[in-house]
Length: 238
Image 1: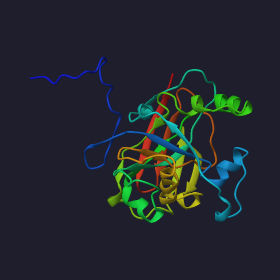
Image 2: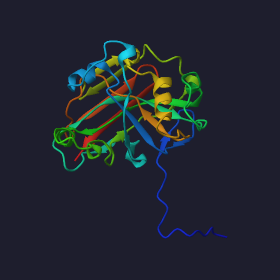
Image 3: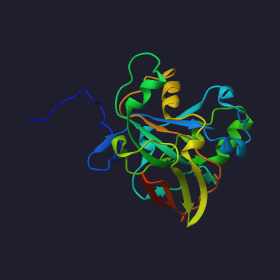
Image 4: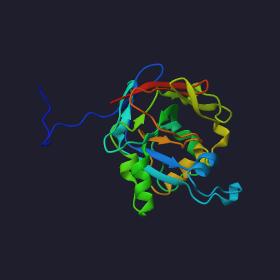
């Protein structure tokens, strides 16, 4: 006997990411961290803190859950002529955070796994919004703007820090940096996010990108990697 509901439209499919070893990870929200590598902050014209004590607070923005892309084909988005790549460590949350502010020392226990992803950005729309002092949601939170690789459970990963984050486009190295260069590490970011949002199982956190962001064109092929952990390959299609 079929199940009936009061829904007046079909229920949208839940975005899911493959998990190494089997199963899938249903995505609830996508949080993103801006300016979390000093070299990228510098190339974008932002101030860079001289010490950990001077970091201030992280910059956060969001993408819709259905921006996730798990296949190789990534459509070139409309309304832009300057689509940029930003390779990032992606953290998957597997447990709900307790009520209140999450202590840094408890944050790691929420992590289900890791992968590598791209924060695709309509840079021309972002620049225009910044120039007018307006929000730049349309530059970040568009369809197909979050390609991600296969999730690797945290139990299979050694401590993060020295691994290289890397992106090649058409075989050319564009971005590369060790995770030890992160301004805010994973537990610190989860702690800061918990001051603003209730973190839940199913959340993804894009941790920020190193220097070297540049344009992608239709036909370009990209290869992203988180050294020894995860890979992501795809192509940009018109």
